[in-house]
Structure formats: C-alpha cells, structure tokens
Length: 409
Image (cartoon, rainbow, N blue to C red):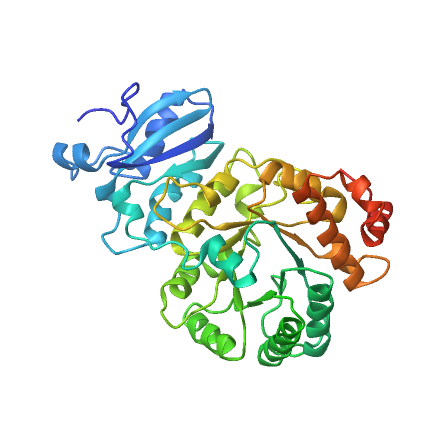
C-alpha cells in the first residue's frame, strides 16, 4: 500500500473535506502528518491484516501539504455519513482521536472546507442577517444590542423593565445571558411573557426591538421548549451551541414550527479555542454553526474587547458573511467587554453588517440603562456616519459621559 503522503498534489475541494491542522511534535513532520491521516481514516497504530489496497486508496486520508508546523489533510467524502447533516460524525473524523495521539505534543484544527456534496446536506440559516434586519426595519446600520445584566438574579418584571429601558434608549436587540434558562428566580414562561409585553409596548411607541430567550436545555426537549417560548411571545431564540451541540441549533432551524431567528452563543468555546497550539479554532465552529442554521453568532470583538481569543478575527467574519457557501448570511455578533468607546474600532474592522452587543457597557452607565443604551446607540450612529466619536459626543451627552467613564480605543 502507498503512503498517506501525497505532498505537492493539488487540493481537490470538490471531492474532499480539506482540513488545516497546526502540529507540535518532536517527530519529523511527515511522520506526524501520516499519524493524523491514518488515525482519522483507515489506519491505526500498527499494520493490520484487514486493510486492503482498495479500501486504502478509496478511503484513506491524504496529506497534501506540509508548511512549517501546518499540514493540510484531505478526507474523501465517502468517509462521511450518508445521513443528511450529520455534524457529530463529521467532527469525529476531522476533530476526533487525533488530539490523543501520543506522538503529538499538540494539534489544532485551524480550518475546514466542505465540498458541495456535504454543504448541500445542510440548509443554513432560516432567516439570516437580512431576515433579522427586516424584522427590525433596520436595513443598513449596524445592529446595536445589550445583554441583560446581572446575567442571573433579576426576576421577570425587572428583566422586562431592563429590556424596555434599553429599547427606549434606541437599542435594536437584547438577549438573555448564557447561564439563564429557567431558574426559580426567573421562570422562563414568566420572563418571556413579560419581555414580550415590553417589546409590544416599545413597538406601540414606534420602536422595533427583539430579545433572544435562552432555550438551552436537553437535546430531546429543546424544540418543545422553543415552541412554548415562541407561543409565549418570543421574537428570537438563543442557544448555547457548544454546550447544547450543533444538533440543537439544527433541530430548531429545520423544524417548521419554529418561526423566529436563532441567536447562537458560543459559551465554553475557550476550552477548544484558547490554546493556539491545541484544540479547535473558532473558524471551523463558525462554519458549522452557519451550516446548521444559526441566524446570528458571537465571534468576539475583533481585537478590541476583554475576552482572550478575541485578539484577531481569524476569518470568522468572512465565514459569517461570505458567499462561498449556499446559505443565507449569518449575522456576526461582537460582544465581550463592549462599551461605546470601542464601537468605532469594531465598525472599522467589521463594517456595517454586524450586531454590536454590550452588557456592562449599557448597565454600567452612570445614568442608568436607558442612558447607557443611548450612549451605545449614539456611538453606532457616529460610526455609521463616519463622524469621530469625540466630535459626536460634543452634542450627545450620554455618549460623552460613557467616553469619560470608560475611555476610547
């Protein structure tokens, strides 16, 4: 049988799933690359009598490039399940046992490209960025939102009041935080009904807003809970994709009874993405979320926020907005230590197709939630108009107070 090495051969994105890995090892890189290709396709740690040439040739992974510590591996589409949209099996192939290989000190899945044959198994976002914009009647400006803070502790009435104050200050979006679902101090039915009433009140006053209710729960119950939340007046759902699984997003997006957008939070992603030499980069997770039907996804703050791992984009913005896949565009959400002083920097990096989300940057304003929302809205208006925030703040008091409190970037 031939080697798994096919160095110098062209990438074939039409017939193979193409993965890029960063590898740390004391072995020659060719040996390490072969170990990954073998473990994730037709091989194992020793020669076996059951592997014949036909199976090896058809189904064996191919290492087609080694550049420094990066390797490119192609997996034949036949290696993947014929079940439509089977993310668990896809991840088992491209990001499975390779992390435990004793010959490697570290290995990180940096990127993955899927051929049309696999992309066509998925439906992508049901609403996407344009569907969210249409619901909000905001065709061009960046969306501007908040996360209800504190992330746990407020009762339904106080949560709804927070949302109303934020909307009155001009915000287009708000959401539950990742740890809030259905706790005794804030039951999900009571919260959803109260927030829906606040949104209706805002609409009667001429302002459209949506709030994402967190339905992150057991896989066998998430559609049922989402249907209930929708019936109680929710205009958007939220799912913690890493803790719930990609299948949870996919189940909601593909269920015909779900008729509102899905806001996807990436909580716990740092367990995979934080180490630059081991784990899974955010980029493959972003691509899978869009494939599975997420309408909006958190991607960090492109280098201007508090979270480790948000220091650069790494292609996530393009993965949300790109036209290289047959899906609607997914709204990128920038959050994590956002405040008015960094909005201009975010818009410069992201453009206008972005949702900018601030929690403490709204709730922490010296004059309260409504003034905090006004400061954020004013910062977005200034960035959209191309007016320096310091100049805009001269005639917009709430922004001026925010800049004085938190500074600028």
